[in-house]
Each structure stands twice: as structure tokens, then as C-alpha cells.
Length: 114
Length: 113
Image 1 (tube, chains in turn green, yellow):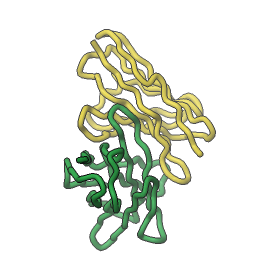
Image 2 (cartoon, chains in turn blue, brown):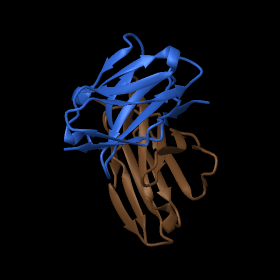
Image 3 (cartoon, chains in turn yellow, purple):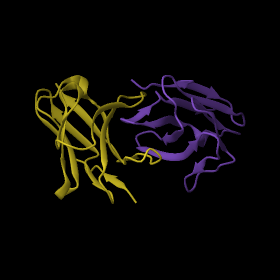
């Protein structure tokens, strides 16, 4: 069974500082990996996804993530955080089978200090 | 790009009544729709998977008689919360898989009073 672990429930960073959100997955085959952001009371917005190819993936809002198969990780990074980045971030794993659902990690709440 | 329109975005209902949530794929055909539930400060948990023209598949612990799912066409899937109770208050969100990933609806905040 597929699973996703986000070890950090809460993270607080200062505005302008760099950010890394951790994500570890368990999946039997080549995974499709996603990062979503959710603002309070809102739906999910896709930040980036990895299907294949280059293991460093660029997304929207200046985010990037690196797929490391040997570590079963797909950590999200941003070099300089903005106050508007404060939100809940979810890592998810799926497959290339359209009938397979996404499995979400528990989420990481990011708070940004001025 | 692919869009899933979910309505209503917010609904308040009285305990014992039923609420229907709709998800429509606007510019693509969704043969499959995943329905998730998210309690406050928690992650998204899959409730059920609907497939056009067949019965929905429910995750363990989800009452199929309480959460009625209908996928009558390739563009519409509905979730009906029957005889709603306060503990059903949650954020419900649908998702349709596609060629390039998964498209999510904007979610429905259900409050049962």
C-alpha cells in the first residue's frame, strides 16, 4: 500500500529565509509525486508534480522539489519565503494508473515570521 | 486546462437533513472521481471512488448508505450526505484523475447544526 509521511507538522521560518519541507513516500512502483498548498478554508492548489525525467522539478511561486529515489523522498524547497507562503502544504503520491487515487501526507503547516 | 467545478462551496444544514454536493468536469471527461474528506487541521482522507456507470467503491469505515455517490455521466459525480449529523461537518473535496495529473474541485465546507 502506498503511504506518505511528512515528518514536520509545523514549521516556522522568517520571511526571506529558505525553506525545506520534508516528504517521504512508500510505493511499490515508480511513483507520481505531488505537492499541493492549501490556504485556510480553501481548496488545493498544485505547486508541482514529478512524473519522470529530471529529478529536480520547478513549480509555481518559486518552489522546487527534488525526487530522490534512494531516499524515497520528495522534499519541497524555496530559497526565500514570503509572508504569503504561510499555508498548509501537502505531499501526495499516486500512480500512472488513472484509477489509482492520491494518498496524502499529514500536511505541514508553515508559519512565516515578519 | 482541466477544471472540476464543485458546488456548493459552503452549506449549513440542520441535523437529519440531506445535502448534495456536485462535481462537474468542465472541459474533459471524468470516468473516475475521488471523494475526500478533510477534518479541521487534518489531512485529506479518501472516502470513496466513483466510476461512471458503476457502483462506487467505499473505503473502510465509510458508510455507503450514508454517503451516497452517483456518477451518472462522464461529467458529473455527486455525493449526498444523508441524515446529516454534526459529526459529518467537514470539508469535502472531489478529484478527477487525468492524463497529466489530478484536478481538484474547490471543496465544500459542510456544517451541520
